[in-house]
Length: 192
Image (tube, rainbow, N blue to C red; front, side, top):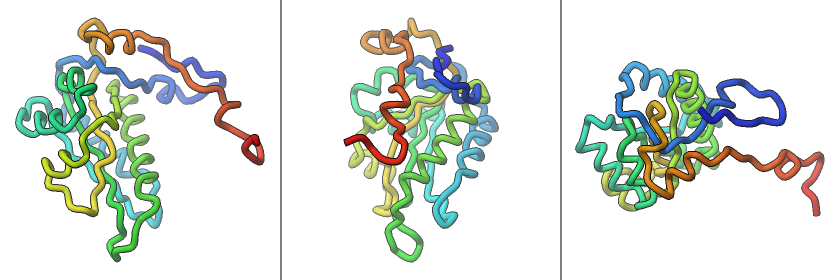
């Protein structure tokens, strides 16, 4: 387990949240997965619109699961194909009245944060992937224009790093790093 080496104390679930590429082969129980989605559903959203939508597939459902793997870019396919669950996170980009929802991506991010923290609390880990073919994803899942595919999530229990080939093995074993707070947090205004 690669806990975050934080400078200031934070909640243990935040410290434990990590994005592995190596997953154990055993499945995620349906009720556990529903609990993770329940947590996502309680995220804050502009005007309580709740613009997040999720499509998921268990590894055992080969047809839908493989369709998801095929939408990923080649850099993600070698390891993501072994995750017990793949999730496609989507944002509903317009309100029901047709006006654009400028907060939709932000709100989906909040839902995804709830999802991954609940997963972490349950002993699961997830890896978010922006490396996918959006056009292929739209076609494969017959998505309406109002839904924007934003990220895929590989979800499951952590496996042994040694099951990965390079360059993924080195990335899996590398120490966790973050920019210092002085690089991302500013009092009153950004530096000139």
